[in-house]
Image 1 (cartoon, rainbow, N blue to C red):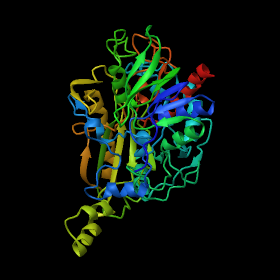
Image 2 (cartoon, rainbow, N blue to C red):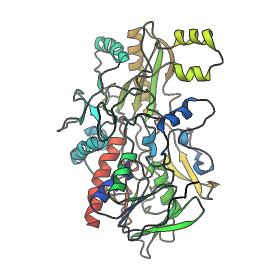
Image 3 (spheres, rainbow, N blue to C red):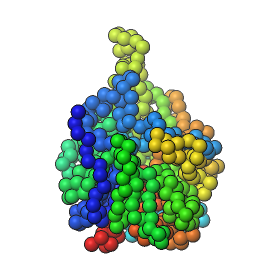
Length: 530
């Protein structure tokens, strides 16, 4: 058996980062490259195994989750009106949820930063699109984004995408016929996967299994930034479960992150600066677990808003059978979208329409799980495969204080710590936007002559698992948790990176904005450790 790695604390650390996903990985790389002594504490393991073996674990019956989620470590509660399946799409490990994400990377629109000013709903960000614009361009280079400047509704940009866009799929061409007649604009969807070799990774070879496993490595994962950070001198400690942050006597600075390793040993990692980058749920949980006499309601929570304004994107979708070949499941990601109904619409919730490249049965998975064999199975596959189309949509949910993440004091994990409790519901205005998305989708399906077999809408919607808003950004310490630089109002050396700082969530996948804010945050921290 191989020796366990050294998980002891790092001496004289300039920066301690909690979480090795895209936010933590980018910050670690940026700061280590500038010469800072950086340590990253990650609760989950390194997934260094062969990605094809992990794919096999996914598609073969009984082999379990390839990313080891679930069980006592990952217990949670959901006390809200709508059940929130927290473990359905998150990953704890080096790379975070980018290990199995779909890789869709869009910039937020200008209106997303000015929602209250423009429409009297939600909130305004303390920064605007122009503040983040150069960081968006840098983030696209860091992730390796393939795209085309063909979206008439996208926010302004000064730089081309670093990689050419993927061509439209065969099913995109089918949708295009109907959309043209309906005057719906289709355009390319930017994607964090290589359309040609880039940054030491191969180009996409079309496995079609982007979620949950990319066997070729063409899709970006935060592992690449962790590797670069380590090459620059950062220390990354996996399976180091941070259980609380400790502050000094004044309550103005964090002095240590207390963590537990698999052997049951407890350690304290000291540093000059601390960055929380463990997601919109675990960021909150750690702050609340770090309560003290100075902060009886949780660390950095003088506003009482840590955990509040939890948001997600809601899914609306529709699909069915078409009497022509569609070649579905040949492409594992979206290549075309429509942002025509995003800005200044009624209802004002942003809606991003997606033309899905996956619908109907998957021949491989269906074969492995089938009860039939031989000619009978082949006949079933011939009848069902490649005759389906589907559309999706992400719909914006506005921030509401009564949607929140807290602690369940009656349920504990395997270390005895209270588990996160997600209190979540879907309001009537969001349901109206979901209904509008379904109406647009139905018009396309009807124009194509699709026999609709399923619909996901207002009454059976589910989340996209984009955890946003729980440590919101703002200028006023009484109504926000972090400032415009993503530093907590209450503690001078505690920063929060990730989508938990979003005051509003728009309807765009959040990872590119997470990356842009991480780059901006790294600039600010760098000035304090230089």
